[in-house]
Amino acid sequence: MTTVHVTEDTINQARELRDELQRFLREYEFGMREVETKISILRDEFTHDHAYNPIEHVKSRLKSPDSIVEKIARKGIDEPDFDRIRAEITDIAGVRVTCSFVADVYLLFDLLTAQDDITVRTVKDYIAHPKDNGYKSLHAIIEVPVYLWAGALSVPVEVQFRTIAMDFGASVEHKIYYKFSNQVPSHLVDSLSDAADAAAELDSRMERLHREAHGIPLRQLPPPPPTPPTPSAPPTPPAPRVVGI
Image (cartoon, rainbow, N blue to C red; front, side, top):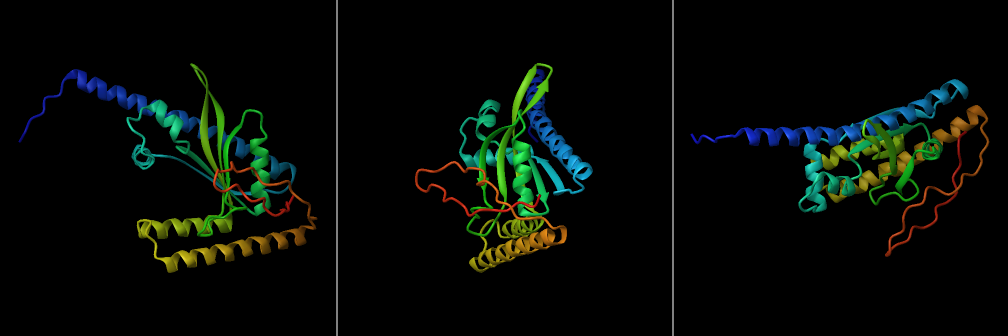
């Protein structure tokens, strides 16, 4: 057996790295909690003042150190340090908001991002522009201020908005892709796309029933959140939508 001599300096360096990693992750945890608080306040206001709750449930997650390392490798980040990770990886903290209807998704997005201390960095509207496999959700990277003893810090948080049907479909899709290590047979990909279409139809039907039961009139929404254009394929303007409140 080989004996490795560990010096006190080596131990201290390891402890310093551990402490720095913990401080790094706490920044994102605090940012995530700020977003959760904002969404909780919106939910309570709707419940008490409007007798209607557009939010079914909220989940949050913080990437583990292993997940961060894997993403560093996937993005090909050479010689990463904490500043580089902050700049390159924006989904370390994530909040998922599951809504009743598609109109609620856009309503919650508008209400959250209209707040003065929120900065929207990027938006990917996979509801207006679904992925090839039928995946639908509204993704936004927002920055929220976190006030620490050393001063204010702007923390990026990924917020995903989706309906119940979208959430169920995404959950099943994730399990299938995990089962096949992302190498999913084409016939299953086709079936996932068909299921996503069926879920979209269910969303539309249930929203119509909701409107009819509550006598809610249709009114047009403004265009969806802008998706930053790419040089090769600028986004196509989506069709008009309706809102349920």
